[in-house]
Image (cartoon, rainbow, N blue to C red):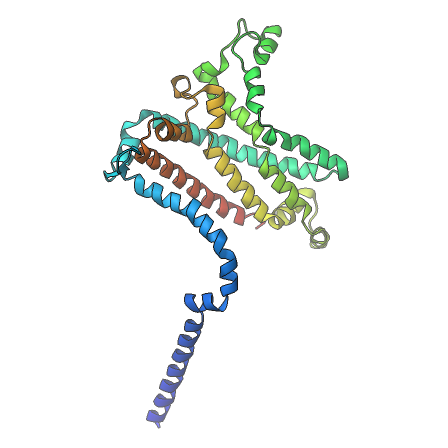
Length: 322
């Protein structure tokens, strides 16, 4: 009797194992590709371009960071030499990474909250008035000659707009050379970055707010939502998580990749490297000195900072509305 029961159990286990193996075989990668080959063919052009121009350069940068490569001669493997030099012997890199982190910590969250707040307020307006105000707030990011305006404002002589105003108000005795004085450089770069940051993220939030299903607010009111702040936290923000994530990624990228502002307003190199960032340091070694191995090591540090920040922000956004 016992033998019969054990035989039955063995047969059942064997059948379950066979079924699992069959299911596994059906869902193996090759079988899935065969089953959905039309979809893979349609995705292939994008995947090839993405791999060629995004994934492959990152892999090559990682490989080159362990070499001494000056473009003219073949790369020479030096192990961790570039990273040791970067963190232990490069004083300018320490200034650059400090400035970049200040940029990211100050401009990233403030700019992100400003974009969300302005988008939320402007979304309350209707029709053409909303479109007009949106254009005004989006204008700084599409104004290509913004640096010309800021150079006029921050000129270091009496014809500079800021100097002229402060002299007329007797707040300063003589004109200041704002962007050639170390203590003012980073402050003005942060102000300009904040002014320019009302761009893609702001427009994304506006689009996200306009796609929220209005019936959600009616259901929330029935469930006990009492004021606009509760609506924002429990309905609005959870409904636009994709836009929040996209806006966060854009802000992280802009905050860590600051370079044009510093080069155009403070010069490269800036006075005592007060406006140096990781990207200006990378451009110095990659585009001017042609030390591509060292420049790749700098790029990899920036890449790790961006990926790490992105992961932290993703976790924070998942908790919105909970």
